[in-house]
Image 1 (cartoon, one colour):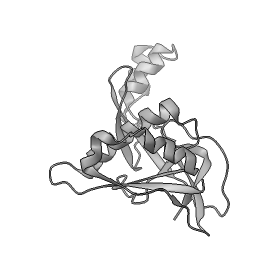
Image 2: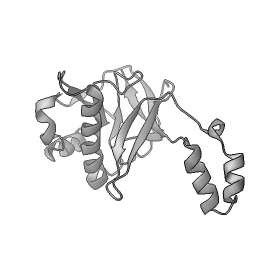
Image 3: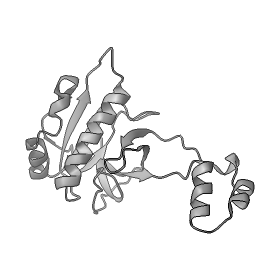
Length: 184
């Protein structure tokens, strides 16, 4: 993780940063799914309650150049500014950026419990209430499944800062619970 590349969403009066970031991230996911090989990580340096307007790609110079050569963001060129690939500054700290999955919907929990045979429909209705729902306050990106067309939310969390990097593989979303990215 000696290099990085920032992709910045340009202000647009008609489309929110969140919508553009979701479209940009979906395009990145497609390319990482095809050719990422687990060596490219992502972070969101302007993260708050939303992902913000900046997507940072982390990796070695060759992998970042190969990704850029695929022109993965071409259909969004008018909405983004892609900076050049640069070396990571010296003396930075590290953190993970991982996916967090919530079992959020009481209805979904009921259906699953019935399908798995853990509960009968009456038991599920009685035992699984809205109080069982878990709601997060993490930033997220709406994603659309290419297999079934359903929209779902990809929640992510920036882990605590660390002094030393940890090796590991990144998912096709550029996220990992073990592998760290430089944070600066």
